[in-house]
Image (cartoon, rainbow, N blue to C red; front, top):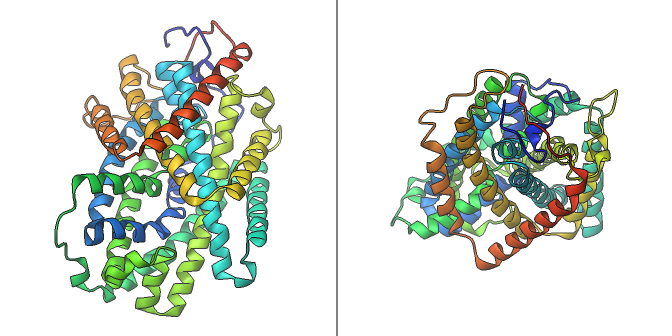
Length: 449
């Protein structure tokens, strides 16, 4: 039993939602990997190499360490709150409706901007792979078809979407693993020699950029209302996914750097494909290009599973029109939310660029992570345990504050314009919260089953 709230919060909604709990540990882990390994890792190695050179793996390890603290907090909170909405539900349960709503908006911004950013790269990659599909008009057509396909899949229900996402995860990993194993035989040790350690500020800025490559766990956890036994499934899936992702990323950076040396920084369009071509031949380069395309297509599928549930959760709690919280009686999917989310993301993808959208996604991610770290501490203080035994985080009283410190340090890498844009988004979100006040129920006791 939680203290009464004066306004509805995610926890105030009955925990028995209309959605079906069918996602297990492997399915959730595959969803996390599928969303996390999207388009970023196929492009970022060149950017990181240009900033830090052979010392680039340091930024990956720093970012992975920061994400490790953050995901411990997310796993702790996720094992205690099983409502659809993921971090939105965790923060809302801990701090009330307004802070919960802001976290929900941050999560939606992160997922929507990141999806739109990766989809623009997906469309251009299709043009590289199949020259007849190159050109702005054809790229828009590709985006329409891709979003239409994943919308139809998700309208049919979560089970089919989870199966296809698991297949996409396997398909995207195979060429990356091939590059790590096969390319390792062509690595020149001299290319990996660090002449001088980079400055802390450079590492912070580069680690901030890499957040885009590591972000995804918070979005994959949005369908928490469809996860079986959240107290066990969420922490296990997070641990399985994070270890595998970190090892793969560091290995890819080192192999690409070892093969191309200083040339890695000069290959911003397709660094991993260029490394595969230089080591294994033209067929390997084509395979990596195809793998990148499949990876980004699978990423879109994972995001189209998760992000409509964010719209559903906000509508469920009265922040958006109630029609967006409707669940199809047969397929048990939030169909109105799926269609609206698809349309919004498609419009952003057509009108925006990768760089601008990725920056907005990164800032939203860090602010959301800060909220999750504080929510993990607060939920522990409140004694919220969900439907079963909550996940026991090692040094659980200390980890949230360590995570907060790391997040604040990473935020020092933001520019003034990025802060200004982020502040404008929060101001707009606060206005929506005020306008929707009349649609939200009041004086409801918050209970957790």
